[in-house]
Image 1: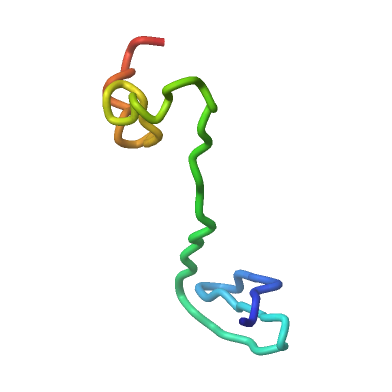
Image 2: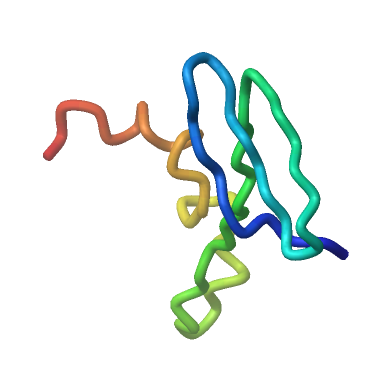
Length: 68
């Protein structure tokens, strides 16, 4: 699999260069770098997933709005 090694914006375009020296011009770049949640390794943690323990910051944000 080829990997992106450089992204440069010039005027209204992005030039993407890969390890294989291929170049692409595009008007948009979408970065999907991924993310994985981290378990706390507490006793019975799995038993409470979905019952107060969750790992979705965007899903759970409204539960904590104005509480900090």
